[in-house]
Image (cartoon, rainbow, N blue to C red; front, top):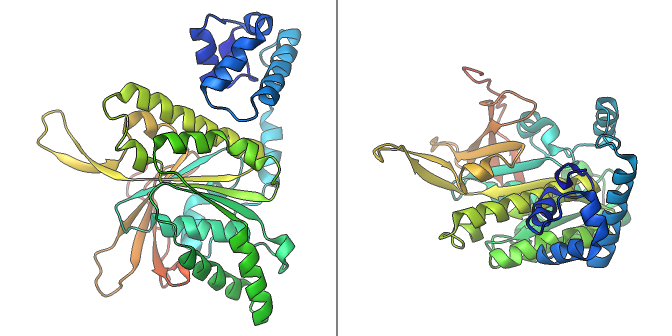
Length: 351
């Protein structure tokens, strides 16, 4: 059985095994140390445990001699999706726009936009919504992970967003209870500062081991995926594309295995036509990365000076909805909120 069709072996590992001459399941099982070498090459945490797990899965697939033996049915996937509770932001327009993209389970949501368009505010609001559950007890608060590559995470701002959401969802709580919940929520948001591409790669690769003992984590944010890679590996675009694809695969796998909502932010860059005469704004990191997110949300500032802090969110990529739909939102002290009766706008043309 070809190593590339083994469900127990992730694609980046399968590619590395092929490069080492391990072409099928028998090759992998006959020399298990090759798998350990590949795991070490990819900086996978818990190497011995991970290797034994992958080898056991590979052994089962090889014994069954059926590449589809572990495949899910459409019904089982539908039931699994229906059972998952999606996150709900305090902004009905964004909830309607994103749909199941706010549901944990392996999808990758990309939020892109120019500086000041609200990308970080969206991430803070998402983490707050993920943490604050329906029960007003500290033990009921969920956890979230915030990987910060730009230094844009401000704890005071996050506390403002959580405090506002608590006051809206639990107006009967007394001041002491609010303080207790705020302290618990701040403690359960795990913030990791990554200063370069190497630290970001290592952080994401070790997420599975970190999340393993924390079943209450509901959201994972990387703000931003572009910052490090726009300054590093610029002279080797092929290597950068491989690393980014590997990171996207790792994020999807962590989201799927642990039922997380995974969000990454991206920058905007100027692209030109072949003649170099016409330019337009587009998400950064190139076409290879553009295939990785399952949903893409573009945030923009509006030009209405009478309504400061109002932005527009446009669905530019989706696996379930027509693209081009948009809504208005407002950035307030409380976080992201609906903009005075703004409704979803359908695209003029849907292809």
